[in-house]
Amino acid sequence: MLISPPFGGGRAPVLARNTVASSQPLATQAGIEALQNGGNAVDAALATAITLTVVEPTMNGLGGDGFAILWDGKKIHGLNASGRAPAAWKPEYFAGKSAMDLIGWNTVTVPGMVAGWIDLSRKFGKIPFAQLFTRAIDYAENGFPVSPVIARQWREAIPILKNQPGFAESFLIDGKAPQAGQIWKYPAQAKTLREIAASEGESFYKGPLAQSMVDFAQATGGCFTMQDFADNQSEWVEPLAFDYGDYTLLEIPPNGSGIAAQIALGILQAANVKQYPANSAQRIHLQIEAMRMAFADVYAYVSDARSMQMPVSSLLDRDYLASRAAMINHNQAGSYGPGDPHSGGTVYLCAADASGMMISYIQSNFKGFGSGVVAPGGIAFHNRGMSFRLEDGHPNQVGPGKRPFHTILPAFLTKDGKPTMAFGVMGGNMQPQGHIQFVMRFVDEYLNPQACSDAPRWRIDDLGKLTVEASMPASVVDGLKALGHEVAVQPANSLDFGSAQAIAKLNEDADSAFIAGSDHRRDGLAAGF
Image (cartoon, rainbow, N blue to C red):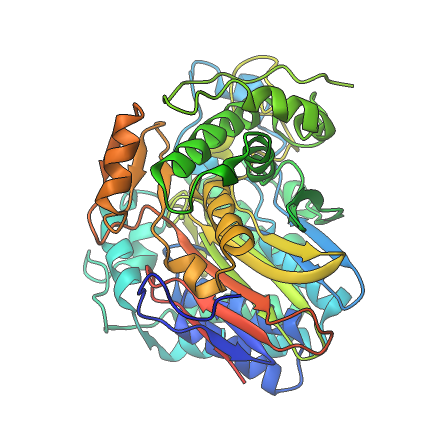
């Protein structure tokens, strides 16, 4: 592994026996504090995640979803803590609409994240659940200075969300967002956090907090019932495993879309992507083409596992992926529909401790602040329901009690069955694209996590257009154009390319320390001791 920073991102990797990496320094410090107080990596991840709902409200909130992949010292576990559609969301509920709304109540599914916190703590945590909330409650009640990138995201959300129920009252000061460095306090959220901590989440799904959310929904245009909340349950799942070189990439199975990264990597292997130099237009061309193919498949086939008609094994079949690779013109950009296999706004963080436990964790309100709907007590709801489809017969068609297609993806690499790296690249559909770029930097170029993060990125945006960072070499941009790509170079301060956090083992020894990185594109921090 190359320790030196080849891309000049301005941050050195962190080497330590215990470490946390997140997108906000105060949250990272909360996780470090949990480790120093006798907690393990899961406690650190949870303390970090809980604090992030306060210090980075632009990307996540108490009304969001979460996922985790972790190594407990002996084996891998996966957790799907995404919520389900309310019982009222039968297809006829959306009669007259051609597509799901993008914001507002008709995008809000039951929040699953809090249930995920509880399940992780009960199964793996060492310190009391309530202790994990200490820093979050302190920052909500007594305030903290808003960091620069978060202040920008806050400001940009106002024109879109200011008229949604509860948003202006909750997140604006005299109609404006707080500025960078301004102290932000939210005592009502502190009270909610205390209630969640004291009741171990019972209040959020079956008690006073649930009743408050239901009452607010009924009064402002939502359709939640107490039964919708009571029925919520996280699910322990077996992560999908897919080999790339000597390593195995683990992703949460559908309704998660991490399979997109695995499909793309399989296509790239079959296309012999390593015949082209790293950082060349030709290699990036193949990555883009493989990603377009993967997106075509996941948008056509991936849904709640209970309604998914195409087996994941068919989508990851090596012969099928080879047939897709054969469709790629190595010298010309193309367009692709879904294949025909044989059928039979987000925060990411990671933590590791000296015992060897590692966790890859992500939680989200989806698009920025999410739906814009904020229930009393600072419960900001995600807009994950916008990912449902309305077409009759589509596997991801909206339905009561159904989980929507999900873009938030924790990732994990192993080698020979042993943990190697917990990582993630937050940012909507950037996530599977970020995963393949990160994996290839780590596996094929032997870069450390910080360098993998610092490397210039490309992205196929939500409209299917190819964009690249301003730091992408001009020779690569010109090469992609020569191959037929329409390329938009984004400004140097663009937030479109996601934010990565990663922690890897320094070597394969059982008692090895870790090397961590945090994305220079955000306010984040990797720290350790």
